[in-house]
Image 1 (tube, rainbow, N blue to C red):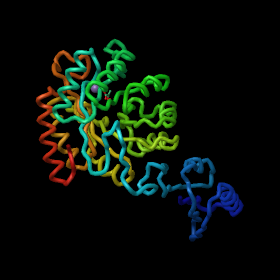
Image 2: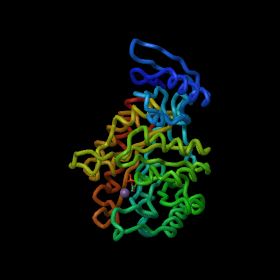
Image 3: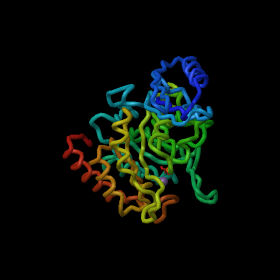
Image 4: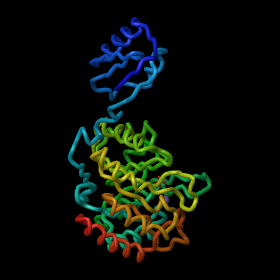
Length: 338
Ligand code: PEP
Ligand code: MN
């Protein structure tokens, strides 16, 4: 961290700040120019609020050198993290396809889709029992009954399951019925929920918030890792921009940026990013080519009748084609999509 004092700061203030910083355990190196004094701070500043230094009237600029996150950082752990979801490994050289409907709608619906996506090549089934809808009048999910149906399907098809949680009070229910818990975009900064998820060992799929920076997203992952749960997979699902042709704008650059900054795996959700079934395959291929560790894709046998997100759901045949095409892309970059 570098601190620049305002011009003509008196020696007493400089000495005061030196002592203040030394009390935090930092080493302070002072440089005196003609007009300015600069402090270079050495030490772990992860737990230090750099912005708080602006409260001192003689501080002009503070520049952080170290990232505000630690455990999610590639500097902390140089090797890729591989997360095991009921026997399916995300990370490393694998490319994993997760498929399923936006919501569990009935036993027949989830049973039919589970069989179809598994045959098409999905390794994990994703379906929402609790749905975070923009309108309180829209279908909110089957809730607890949806989780029961998912645990039946998990047994019947030997299919690992991921489903979205909305409230920390539901954690015990999820522990009994799923293999991975999804934190949706709207809850990425629900720190009370993230802290509770840090206390368990079940893998967490952490979606990027609708308008969040990569640093904020990694800080949310840091909440989970710092609590003791290292099993986090990140999911880029598009961000809000001025562009209205798609539901969100898929931030493809997030993939190489995350790979550089963090050891955590990153998958891509082209369904919510585009909001249209027509664009899902193109974005999927782009994501794999850019180095994503997997895809999360919405599939419905009858999208016109889907209770949520039918407009972006692929029919099973189209999903099967997508898996085949993505496999070729994965092979071209020497990765394995089984
Ligand atoms: C979902 O995955 O169904 C969902 C609601 O996604 P997001 O949180 O990315 O909007
Ligand atoms: Mn959805």
